[in-house]
Image 1 (tube, rainbow, N blue to C red):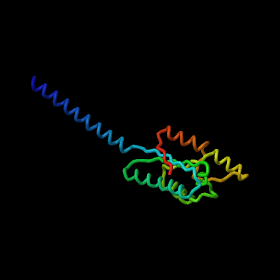
Image 2 (image 1 turned 90 degrees about the vertical axis):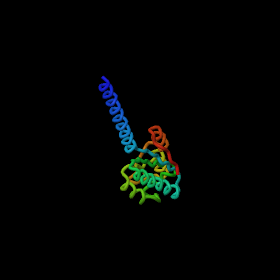
Image 3 (image 1 turned 30 degrees about the vertical axis):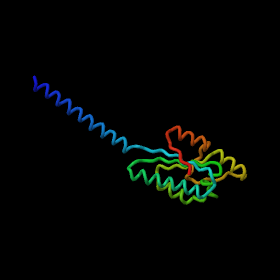
Image 4 (image 1 turned 180 degrees about the vertical axis):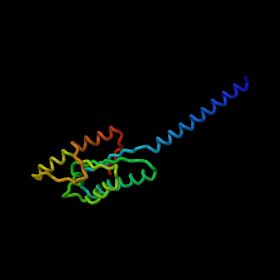
Length: 155
């Protein structure tokens, strides 16, 4: 009887140990698969601010890649910051083209409200960089991203 009780206790300990090992492996797997989401806000027509925003994106990508983690970044421009995505006035056009090829998890979002107003003022439709996608409103896009768990950065 003692042998049976000892065997049952030993088996329970082994099962508990396997459970702890499995839980730590599952936790490690979850950590490895962690995805960071970051919204970067640009609303100034200032090459220094635009370059700082792009530097932030590069630094985020490098940092999380070095940790084996994934980061999804969306750069949202509105107001005077929309010049960042204008094909005729962007001081960072070449960087955006290069970065969009280099980073899979990077998106550029242009404010539709600002685009419409700039186009009306110019008397023609303003062309945007092909890398930028139009969203209805830059402000609403930033709110939506934050409500969906994105961290907010404004350089």
